[in-house]
Amino acid sequence: MDARGIAALGVEGIAVRFGHVAALDDVTLDATAGQVTAVVGGDGAGKSTLLRVLANRVRVDAGEVRTLDRSRIGYQPATSGVWPTLTVDENVDFVGRSYGMSTADIRARAGVLLERAGLDEALTRLGQDLSGGMRQKLGFVLAILHEPDLVLLDEPSTGVDPVSRLELWRLISATAGEGATVVMATTYLDEAQRAASVLALAGGRMLASGTPDHILAAVPGSVGRLDQSSTNAGVAERAWRRGTERHVWIPPGEDAGSALVIEPDFEDALIALSLATASDEGGTVDTTMTGRAALRRGAAPPHPPADPKSPTASARDVVKRFGRATAVDDVSLDVHPGEIVGLIGANGAGKTTLLRIMLGLESADGGDVTLFGRPPDNASRRRLGYVPQGLGLYTTLSVRENAAFLSRVYGVPTPHLPPALREVRSSVVADIGLGRQRQLAFALALSHGPELLVLDEPTSGVDPLGRARLWDTIHAQAEAGRAVIVTTHYLQEAEQCSRLVLLAQGRVVGRGKVADLVGAATAVLVRSSDWQRAFAALDRSDLPIMLSGRDIRVAGQEDAAALRDRVLEALAGIPADVEEVPATLEETVVLLDSDSRASIV
Image (cartoon, rainbow, N blue to C red; front, side, top):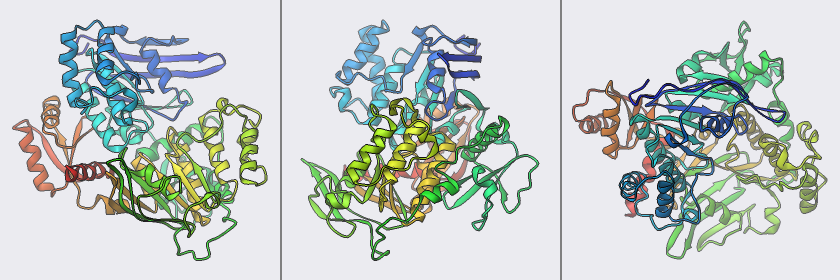
């Protein structure tokens, strides 16, 4: 029993089947009060089903479930749980009354939570008019409004920008710090690492469980870094790209050969565990769009640029206003053949508007834009391939019909589909699963030999191994001479880009590689035996804090000694060890965005 008198919550060896499909198979999860437990995996891994089991919404076919009555559970679905046609105030009132709370209790509790979430000045705004980050924060407020003992969060931060994600994590951490049991599903590995414990799922089965350190230690064999000149085809299906490097899983007892054995990080660990599981089960890894297969699909564009040094797409001093709001403010950007440019920043930073202007879908109020050396038009847009976040497929048509439609639009032969898609060519796209849908979107985007690829959140909802495979495909296209623009909220992918452009409030506030952006940012790690008091004190201080297990990270722009002094002052005598650590890109993005907002005010 914990301090609230609640027995340990979780599941033991459960199985859930929907018809002939096993959604969960022999899954065990232990959730501890006062901590965040992360359930990580790609779409279709079984995360939502597990949360719905704990929420008493899905019955198990086998195993034991230890959960609470619905009145003591707070549940945020993947759709945020916000009613779009109600205002923030009306959403809160409706949910509070549904739990039998009095008007006075609703006002008191909501006042604190909405202020903490930064929504206290948006009470009259409709749910549908909130930004993605604001909507997810409101959904979290609704889930914990009645002070539940068990909080279940289904991918609360998917598609949310880094700044809003950090604010959301602050709310989640505070809820755990107050003693609630928090179980959160996520596809982001950096979020999973912050949790006290992690359950990794793949295809409804357990891939790994325990603390992040325990999972790292459980990797069978070892992980190595391949020499750039390595051409060993035998390891292709066990290798993946990490930025400019290629890593490989080396099974137990196998010679590392030319690979240099390295310490894996959390992403490496989950990819290696996925490969090890496939090997143990006698399966093979799908390399349809990866490794050598990806390089074969990365044929050079049919119309190479006359001058490879000239940018494929270019923006010069671009300005765009919507009424009195300036969405893009004096932004310049070049994208050259053979490079991958990552466009990052918070929601509302101007990324989408800038892309639409560069592609000729919006007109600029100032500045110049060229696409393939001339102003964008219909002819130049036919020379690019686009994979939107929603994939852009016709889900009510079959795979074959989607391919035929693209063939007619671009006036090219019907695209050649990889084997995994040919197997389902007669199936309606809605029924083939997200992995194959994403594969189809990439295949169609590449089918007409584009010279520019525009990818909007291309790996959203994809498991670690699938994400690595998709990045193999992206790099193969760049190596073949295509220019690539990628937008992403998953900042661990930043290392995959040739360079990054960081936007905040419509302005470029940083550009270059990860090391260039992190620059002079500093961070400290706080460890305290009195964790709850330490977290509460730092939370009240308005310092940019982030939970990492039971440790607390604090970032700043000043030197490490000055930041340490600020942290100690905020702790006000609470015993703690404060250690200098390298700042992360996510922390740097949050700091630069905050500075940009302050300069406008």
